[in-house]
Image (cartoon, rainbow, N blue to C red):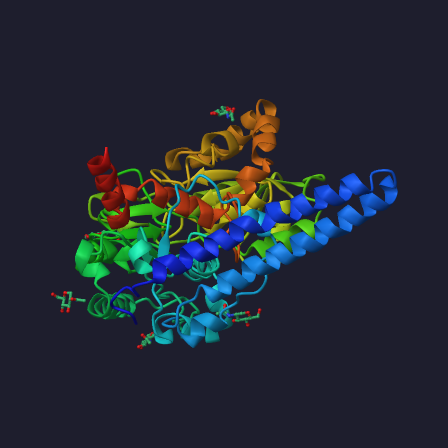
Length: 461
Ligand SMILES: *[C@@H]1O[C@H](CO)[C@@H](O)[C@H](O)[C@H]1NC(C)=O
Ligand SMILES: *[C@@H]1O[C@H](CO)[C@@H](O)[C@H](O)[C@H]1NC(C)=O
Ligand SMILES: *[C@@H]1O[C@H](CO)[C@@H](O)[C@H](O)[C@H]1NC(C)=O
Ligand SMILES: *[C@@H]1O[C@H](CO)[C@@H](O)[C@H](O)[C@H]1NC(C)=O
Ligand SMILES: *[C@@H]1O[C@H](CO)[C@@H](O)[C@H](O)[C@H]1NC(C)=O
């Protein structure tokens, strides 16, 4: 790994950029001339210029890709070279990430034991904590990625901690998370100067399980352990978020949605006409009995899910199921209201699936802080029911159905909203990774590069 900046790297990047810039106008100019000569044979001209246009745009996009490849300096390992640099299907989307304030992110090339080794288990990139994988992958091919760490605003540390699945119950064991991350930090801080330079404050981690970077599945233990010392100056992308003070969010962080595979959503949409009739009124599938939370300072005696089950199981309007069912997304697509009660943690993948499949989420989790509030107008697309009111659920939903349900459904059906919570394998404008990048672009005061640039500007003027 390079500790010193290669002396002429900057000139090299500039050259590549210039080449890229001059490609298109030249071809258009040529096209224009041909047009003038042949204007009388307009059909031929039309045909010719169309073919020329498609041919040149094909060349241009291919060139872009080659540039992209040749940008990789030699210190990038084979693992990264081999990771999927296939032709981006939407050059358009990649070139229009827009409004990210010229953000640059450097992705550390860590040994595979920190990340890609875990992918040998197929679940690793698909389960509800898989945003740690998805964000890493999307960044690798993103326009914001820089291969020059001296040019970076933020440093992404790709450690997958959620894929040590228990052979007994299938849950991820995260006992090793602290030591794995500490080991990664020790590596990057000894081999690169950037961690020490900022004490990690421009470094970004993902902590996608129940209680963020507290790395424990039981809330009281998580709270007692707190955020590891080593991460406390950094930025954590975490699914956990509450509106009150909580030791597991006492670190600079961005609340992100849990991972739901965009492919699974697409498949469900294709097989079930989602804008067709919804024959289930209120839907919930999942465990109905959870231990009441018993956390020092915040005692929850109400067992929200148990109340729902006891009170509404016999009610024809409610479709409540306790068993796992692989095809549950089709049930969401058939439902008007989808119940999203808190479980172990306040957040739930149901929230993402409901939004993506057009079922009005009914959020029953006091104090939950939802992801991407600047992009997703949660109050306009969901119903919030206080935990203490869960016994009146039917009454509350009936009132919504009689008054503003169609407004809420229309708001929910906005494609901008439905795509904001999904992580695509390549960043698309407005998707979940893009929302994260935008949130980071609001934190440029932490960027060493940007503070230097602005100091330079102050000096110049
Ligand atoms: C690259 O794609 C192939 C197939 O699409 C997949 O098996 C492999 O795991 C991917 N590699 C990475 C690093 O994402
Ligand atoms: C995975 O979890 C088990 C406990 O379930 C633990 O014994 C093992 O050391 C963990 N593996 C790693 C690599 O941390
Ligand atoms: C960063 O600081 C640590 C602890 O003080 C030290 O061991 C390490 O060598 C430093 N890294 C660099 C690149 O100087
Ligand atoms: C809750 O925890 C306290 C101690 O932290 C304990 O005394 C009490 O019995 C617990 N209550 C339940 C219902 O488990
Ligand atoms: C719908 O009506 C309920 C009251 O029944 C209200 O709390 C909620 O804000 C309304 N939502 C929208 C989007 O108008």
